[in-house]
Image (cartoon, rainbow, N blue to C red):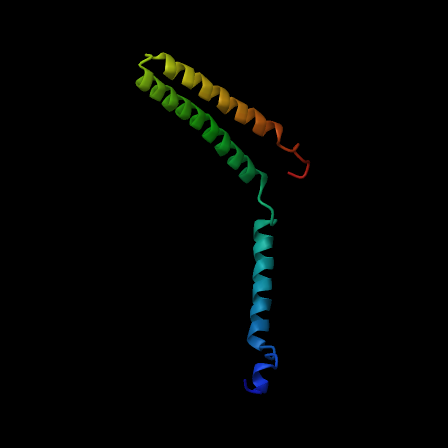
Length: 111
């Protein structure tokens, strides 16, 4: 080990870093003014919620149909497995949608 003092002394502040930080702060302030607020808007949250509801409904229908069709093919039960799987898929999809709707927080007046 060597007694090199330069390795133990802190690096002095660089004027370029300070200037960069000031420019970043100014750019963030301009962007905040341009966009309005930092929080995502309510329309984005509504869009995500709508996409999730659509995915639950389509996934329930397709999943139940595929499982029912698989049961029909394996046990040779005709259309009954497909129909029962379809209705079970619809039931699961609506249960998920109702559960998701029940966990939403009430809308605020800020919107």
